Length: 466
Image 1 (cartoon, rainbow, N blue to C red):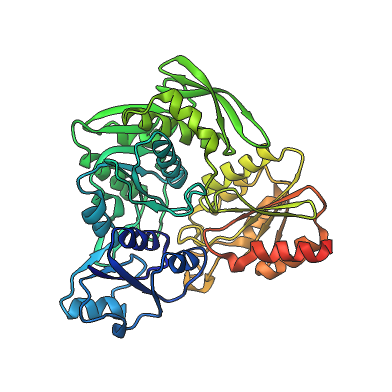
Image 2 (cartoon, rainbow, N blue to C red):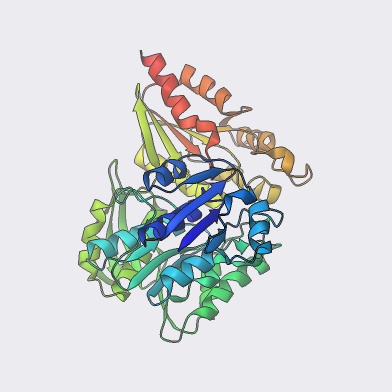
């Protein structure tokens, strides 16, 4: 089958292209721009890419055109495909039809923690010998790619609540045929898609309705919205979390420089000590959901817990990009205020004696708006200082709705924190590289490339060192 992907450089679309290539199909794709890490991955997988969107990119003998959800209705390639009568599908439709159908689908959904939970579960199942297929929204370092076409009967997929395509406004996860759902959190997000919390909640309620009677919901009991959604699940529910009453829980959580250690508790009984290479209490909670799901899939819980020590983490999730002249530069995807809070706390726990600088770029459709203007200041409390830049492509957000980075800095200063506003990545690099002392940690949070700030800072630090 000859397949063309429109907007191939997105995380999900690129991974789907890799899956299709791995399955033996002839694959190519186009995009407006090609940026790391997906650009390099596509090249390594031998997938041809075409710059820009042009109807001429569609070969007459193309069997299938897959349209990414970033494409608008006026995308020239998508419109040409429809006008020519070519078979057109969305990314979730294609993933479901060609790869998930016929397998036990494990959908990891929720506002926070989807990527880590899905990647960690996939790793545990691989280590247990189940050889699952998977597709997640980040790149697990153990595998070097965000997908795998396994021989086993399980497919683990990160279930995004964002809309499917311009021709299908339903959440992506409604296409994924769930047998098991791991639900991590339900907290308002995607203000460009959902009008309010009621609409957002309804999306997850819709996912619950897709579970079969003999399915399973693994639900984070620490989240009241998850509990509310779970009450309507038509199947068995297993809970996890750090609060009282959860079937899977943890005690004696001890952060360390190389790992987080905790005692695993299942149904009130101590199972043993777990060594988790990831930082932060939120990742302890994610791990509890993973272990509950793994057991439901037939993996011995002690074997699953023991395998966690080999997990190498995920690109752009507390990823150390380098240590130069005593300064550690960390890359993280955090953007929602809750995730920012937990990520900053995790960095503080891992580097308790270091000077922690949190750098934040509001880049998502929600963080660029004022939806969480009042919530963000408290999210940075664990940092020694905070650096903020204006929202990405700020001019594309109406001024009345636009997030105010200067107001965030003022609120942080009023709270007694050291905070500063810089106009762009280059200003941030110039300021930090000139004054950071040894044993400083720079935690850079953005869901985009942020003008390659990580490498720019490391390069400036090398110049200083030399």
